[in-house]
Amino acid sequence: MKPSIMLLTIFLPIFVFNFVHADAPSSRPDSHAPIGVMGEHGHKTREVMLSYRFMAMDMQGLQSGTTALEAADVLKDFMTVPTQMDMKMHSLGAMFAPHGKITLMVMANYQQRHMEMEGSHDHATGHHAHPVGTHEMTSSGLGDVKLESLLTLWKTDHLNFIGNIGMSLPTGSIEQTGMDRNILPYPMQLGSGSVEGRSGITFFGYYGNWSYGSQLRGTFPLHTNSNKYQHGNSVNATAWGARKLSDWLSFGGRLLLSHSGQITGSHPDLNTNMSPSHRPDFRGGTRLDVAISSNLMGPAGKPLAGQRIAVEFTLPIYQNLTGTQLKNRWRLTLGWQYAFRL
Ligand SMILES: [Cu+2]
Image (cartoon, rainbow, N blue to C red; front, side, top):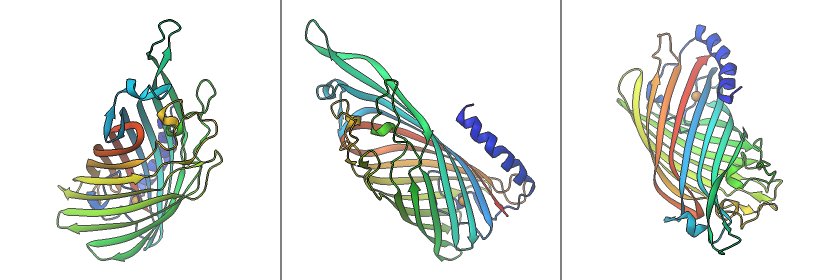
């Protein structure tokens, strides 16, 4: 069974059951941030929210720092180079508010990663190197599970300050191998292998038909993983604005600035001459993305009350990559959320 169908099978009964009991929280389509932002809203006491997110992203073209590179040039230093990578992620999330000022959140995901590599070799005759064919790598499975609590620090009718504190558990595999049984390079692994601390602060406000907010987040791996490396810390900041067009529709946009560090340590079986993706120091960088988004929600009192569908499309504006890496081209996030009172 395909993972997307599997997720639907798990979710559908819950959905149908609760549909009957729909006691919608009073809110507006933009009372949740664009779908790419996580943990930006708390819930009322005894409110539950279930969510499903689908994320797809595409990377293509090599770059070091802000300079675009040709595969042929990078092949002077490595046996192979990545030319394209894509990732799909299905996430299930649940939120629950045991208290008006505390919301607990858990998120789990299933990933499918795919990378195309181009190789070079020396011909036995002629002694010249040139790219030959392509080969592919794939990996799939569960990613790291994330737990978070959202604490309302300060709240008025129109403003909301939330503190986010949580952790990421190393449930995602860091042992993914290729057809040849060799360990796959860092970007193809499904988890970080480390327990990570996650903290953040979120601000959310309303002004008439407008809403706005911002979130600052940090992720800090706490130890070296079982394969002798550790992901770098990452920090990201996002700011969004949205306009409510009706009870059920809003449009918004946001900017996302993020920075992540290199990997420290290295996997003993990853040969750094193989490809730039095998280099622990060729990870991370600084980037600025822009996203447009829309939220649709079932208005209170109507049959689809409490349900939301949201979409976000993200494009890079600036990317400064540490070492040679594939650059991001786009990211698409689709989400379904359903909130109800227990
Ligand atoms: Cu929620």
